[in-house]
Image 1 (cartoon, rainbow, N blue to C red):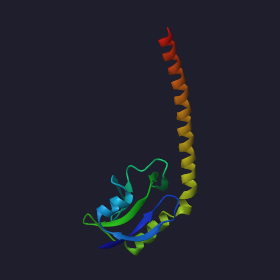
Image 2 (image 1 turned 135 degrees about the vertical axis):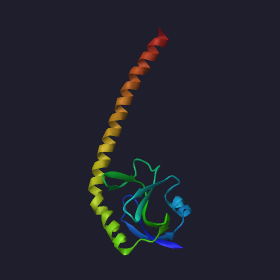
Image 3 (image 1 turned 45 degrees about the horizontal axis):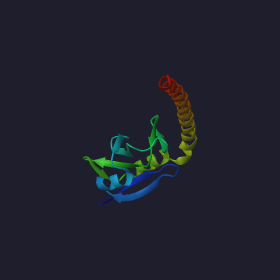
Image 4 (image 1 turned 180 degrees about the vertical axis):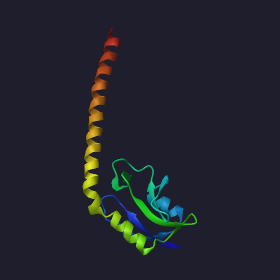
Length: 138
């Protein structure tokens, strides 16, 4: 049985898709470690828990979602098709134009912090290596 849901990929517009309603397919599409976030009473966001930190996608309730994710409806713990109202709501919520600037800002901050840590580690390693070389020479 196919279900209607929303597929959200990094740096791409939200897509309305029909996929098989099995977790096996969802795992093949997104990844094995699924992270399920309750969006509201009837809908959940299914994302990959192990998505790379460089795959910034969208921001949801102040948190960054990484990698590709799906927005689907659930009923009795089973995946079901989304209603038109919910599809429209989440489609508008995850439009790329709304998130591009925020994601770019977060990416800049993340990269600055990352490179700062790398430089700090290099300095620390240089000091440590000098100490080890002098101890071995003595």
